[in-house]
Length: 407
Image 1 (cartoon, rainbow, N blue to C red):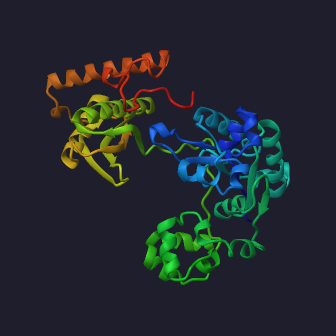
Image 2: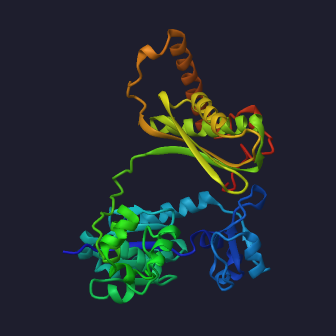
Image 3: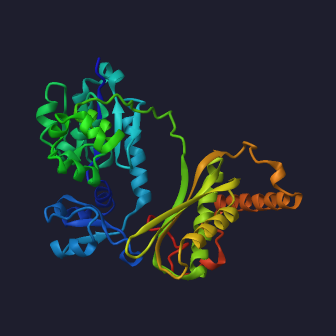
C-alpha cells in the first residue's frame, strides 16, 4: 500500500512573519534583506506585492530597487522566524509524529497512519492550511503524494495557500511538463549538463536512457532518474529521531575585508570560540579542522587538517586554524568571508587520546584550559552570550561581537 506523504511549505515565510510583526507592511511592496552595511545586501524574501515587480530572492538590493523604487526593505529577525517555525511544526505534530523539517519553512509529514483519524491526504492538508492560518496568521501550500519527492513538487505547484495532490494516476500530467530544475537535487550545474543532451523537463529525464544519465552524473544521475519516474522510498523521520551532528562550524562576512595577521587572528579567535562552545554544548570533540576563505571576488578556497588529538578547546582550534591559514593564504591578501569548522566528531567522553602524547605539564595545561573555557560557558549561560568576549573583538570595525539583527 502506498504511503500518504505531505510536504508543507510556508508561503513567503520571512516576509510573511515581518508582515505579522508590522501589519503596515502588508499594504506595500516589501522585502527582507541582509544589512547592506554588513555587505549582506541581497533579497532574502518578498511579499506578494513585491512579486508583482518580479523581485527575485538572492538578487541584490540595487537590482530590486531598479525594478521597484518604492520597495520597503526590512532587516531579518531570525529569532522570530525560528519561533514561528517551531509553532508550525508543533501544529503538524498534532496529526503525526513523523515530521521532518527541510529548512526553517518546509516540512515533510508521513500521515499514512493518521488517515483513519483525520481523513485522506487532501483532507489533512486542507485542515493543516486552515489551522496554521487561524493560529498563526501565516499560510502554507501543501503537496500530497505517495513519496517525498513528488509531495515537494506538489507544494511548489500552486501558491499561495493551496493543496495539490499528485497521485499515481495524474503524476505524469502534472510532473512531466515541469522544468527539470524543479526536481530535488537538480541544481544549476546538473541542469546545464542535462540541457546539453536536450533534457529540459522532468518528463524528458524520466524517458531518457538511465545508463546515459548515470554515465554523465554518477550516483546523482541514478537518483534523479528514479525521482523523475516516481521512485523514492526514503522515509519521513520521526520527531523522536535526532540527526547525528556531522560538523560544527561558524562563518562570517566582515564589515570590511580582513588584511594582515592581526585582523585574521582577531577573527579566527572569535570564530573558534563559538565553534568550541558549541562542541562542548553538544558533548563532542573534533578530530579535523577545516578553514574556508572567500575573497572580495567571491573566489573560495577550503583547507583542512587532521588534529593530533580531538579537541573542543577554542585555544587549540584557533591555533590549528591559524596554522592552516598561514600555510595556504597570502596574509596580505583581502578576506571577505572566513569560516572555521570542526569535523570528524567524536563523543567528548571517549578517552581515545594516547596519554603518551602528552607530558605531565602539557596535560595539566589542557586541563586548566578546559576548566577556564567551561567556566566561561557557565557565565555566558547565566548572563548572556556576550558577557565575556575577546578584548580585541570589542568595538572593532569588522562587525565581530556586535548584537545580532534578530534581537
